[in-house]
Amino acid sequence: MNFTTLVWKEIKERPTAMITGLATIILGVAALVAIHNVTYFSERAVARELEALGANVLVLPQGVTLQDYYGADLHGQTIPEEMVHQLAFSNLEGVENLSPKLCVPARVNDRSVILTGVLPQSEFQAKAAWQSANLFSKHKGCKKAHCTTDDGGTNSLATKRTIQELLEHEALLGADIAVATGLKAGDKVDILGETLSVSAVLPVMGTVDDGRVFAHLHTVQRLAKLGEVVNCIEIMGCCEDIAQGLVAQLGEILPGTKVITIAQVVQTQVSINRMMQRLSWLFLVVLVGIAGASISSSTIANVRERRREIGTLMAIGAPPGFVLRLFLSKALLFGSAGGLVGYLLGTTIATTLGAQCAGVAVTPLPLLGVTAVVGATLVSAAASWWPARSAASLDPCICFQEF
Amino acid sequence: MFRLESVSKEYSQREKSVVALQPTTLEVDAGEYIAIVGPSGSGKSTLLTLLGGMIAPTDGKVWFYGQSLYDLNLDERAELRRLKMGFVFQTFNLVPYLTALENVQVPLLLAGHSKSGQRQRGLELLDQVGLADRAHHKPNQLSVGQQQRTALARMLANDPSIILADEPTGNLDPATRNQVLTFLDQFHRSGKTIIMVTHDLQAASRATRTLQMVAGSITGHAAPADKVA
Image 1 (spheres, each protein chain N blue to C red):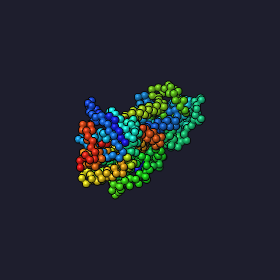
Image 2 (spheres, helix red, strand yellow):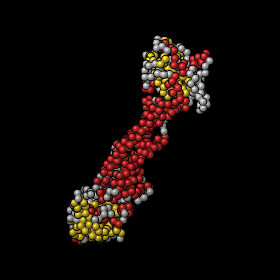
Image 3 (cartoon, chains in turn yellow, purple):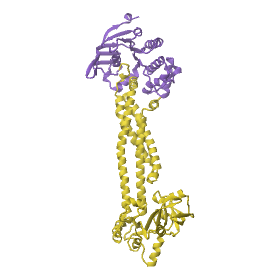
Image 4 (spheres, chains in turn cyan, red):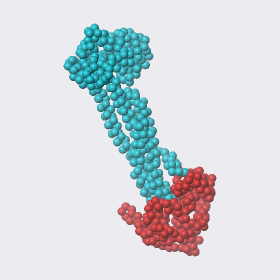
């Protein structure tokens, strides 16, 4: 027999004694790990998206809020399409692309969808050639090596918010819509009383775009009978430096509109993430307190229950340090096991619910696992320290019947 | 072996002081078999715990082989108990989640014996008390007599020179009681010193000296010839 056998046999004898403490550690660690995972990956996703999109600027109708924009632009407010052409030929330095959008609700195969009209880049280019105008240019000192227009693949709509070619009778399906309706490239789709041809299915984005059907802007304008209007114009600047300057210039060119940078939008998201992280620290304090109190009370109860056993061990020669180790080892075992199980549970929750609820792909963070195990073990040991010390300082005489 | 110099013990209970042992002077020689008798609350168990280095006296000195017991620190006293003293309890005090063999192994574990050494010695001791076939039974699977014999085997694990027994026959039926007393006689004959607290006058009669305690004081010493038959 060794020391570990003694600790392990006692745990097996009284499995319920520490279950509350263990459950508190597991739940506490799981909650913290889940929150941390989601906020961490959410921030990374936002940063990645911002980097990929460059200095993006939104032009919205005056009364529209950011929430409306995130709500798929179904706010019903519009601005004239003419503004798009004003922008395209205004010779603004640093504008790399424009993407006007008009969104209307529609139904496909009895499913609600957002029909979004987009203007393909080829139309800007054709108009520019016809007018002999310079379309899009870098600003002086631009850090970006090449201002690029897209190669025209359908994926660019997902990644760069623009598309090179889109005919008036064509439609592109968001990934969710394609799955829900069973439609694929080459199929026909009836929408708002017209039959369009599905030219492609977009890749999964994890955003509201997965629930959209994209069609030519002029087709959507005609089907929705809204005239030559758009809900918003997304502007891709060539690099981030240009964003603030563009906002001021756009304000002058397009009076009566709301011009904001996506960096500001992202900043809002980042602020929310930071708030979540700060909240997770608050949770940490609360959960550490609860877990600590729970483990401490379990250990106190365990010491009380084992008083005679402790006295007997001391009578037959166990030094106080042995008794201290007996209780602390148990606490360390529960802390590390709770930390590990909590980490696994939290990571599972984050990977499962992160994608579904927050639209963030979460992968396990091994360093977080180490932190969870070490943290939970330290909390458990600290919470058990005082009861373990009190056990070690008991008088051995309590082993006798009369004491 | 033991020398008590004006040793007294007082307990505090709700700010009141209770004298458990009046100033007592006593000598115990190696190889003695002493029975401490007296009514409940007379200080018998207090005297036993003082001898076992388990609770510090309020006053006086307890000497053990020329060493002042309570001038040693807690670890040193624990080591002394581990190597030189064996305890027998009225309620046996076996660890409930360990088997008979593991209970006997605990003092050996504390003394730093190897796993195989613990096992071999444990089985020998259980065999010595007639429990070789009960080695892997837990206390709740053993009869009362078997539990006390397991406790005796545990007590012998580190071959103590002195045995301190607190009512060792208090919870036993007559047959088991005689069996336990016979074991104690054997241990005494093998040279061990035994100090036994008991209410049982017949058990006390087997001792070589009896100390009568009343209200925290030793009121009488009885030599073998004077004892109850």
